[in-house]
Amino acid sequence: MRLKIVAGNWKMNLDFEEAEDLISAIADELENIDLGHAEVVICPPFPYLEMALDIAIESVFSVGAQNISHFDNGAYTGEVSARMLASMDVDYCIVGHSERRKYFNETDEIIAKKIDQAIEHEFITIFCCGELLSERQAGKHFDVVREQIEKAVFPLSEKEFYNIVIAYEPVWAIGTGVNATPEQAQEMHAYIRNLIASRYGKDVADETSILYGGSCNSKNAPEIFAQPDVDGGLIGGASLNADEFIEIVKAIL
Ligand code: 13P
Image (cartoon, rainbow, N blue to C red; front, side, top):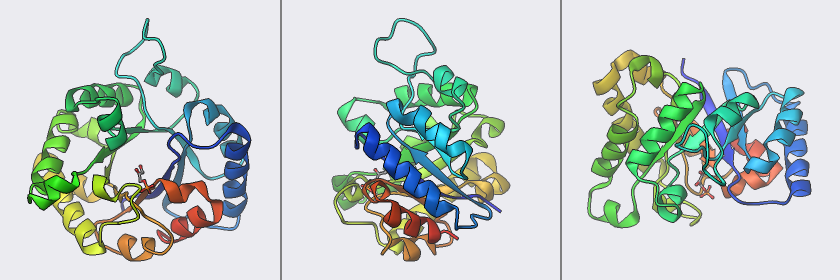
């Protein structure tokens, strides 16, 4: 059975004290929950990873980075390498988020290099894909998502692909309060699973976790997560409140 995952992407939010309070509150609430075959991942900003890892030792959540460098090592001021994060025992990383594509000019080629770094250092990689509103309105959303996945992920061998989690995040739904409907999410997730089956076979596709992201909250999560091809969520704004985040976690159980 494929893994159900709820991951919180904090983006560039919270000061250190706020971050520590939030992680502690989430850890406290997780003590009363049996996750079973499900995984909770918290992706704070880089400077808070060590604090998050310290709290995670006593808890059941995993810790992820929001980004990694496409370079291996060396004179790249301001970059954080996969090797560094792996040496801290960070398990997950997010690659290809639309905010990285938009504000930091990350192309499919750069994202493919990041995925190579992540795979080499054995991260579970949450690869984000998703179309713009204009692309959906033009009826190109399937083609856009297919191209993103084909360019960045499909160069991987079957063995390497086992560490990939796909997050479908329609850009028009991110931070807007307008989530994809459960039907829209299911339709795209089923399309992505078929795409994976055509490249790696049905068994691999059936084992791949495909998460939904974009204005997901405790109210809409139960219906979205109930779709057969939705295996959890990548949560932005709603992951910054412990009670709200825990309600979303409960929706995958
Ligand atoms: P919101 O949940 O704030 O829409 O953000 C989604 C997202 O981008 C998660 O990576």
